[in-house]
Length: 80
Image 1: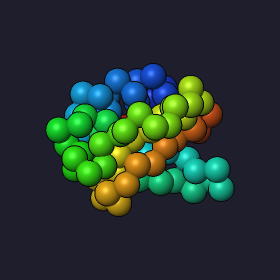
Image 2: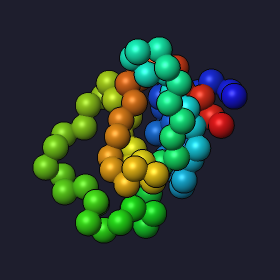
Image 3: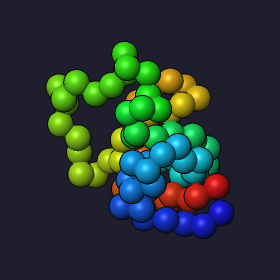
Image 4: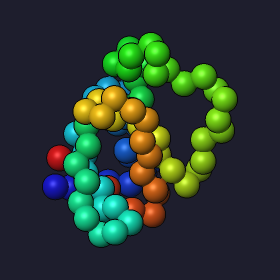
């Protein structure tokens, strides 16, 4: 797996579906398949703009859990 930056993760998530991994706060590796591309996300889960996003987090829609999740920019992130 190749390590990438949080900015690279954001760009790849905007481009489409991405399989990636990140180190969770407890030290375990979490595999994820996600996107921020709206045509890949169920319309009921589209953002409403009600919450401001944090510069310290990279939000993504987890296609396996069908929920929004986020990765801290301080965590190690890898492309799968």
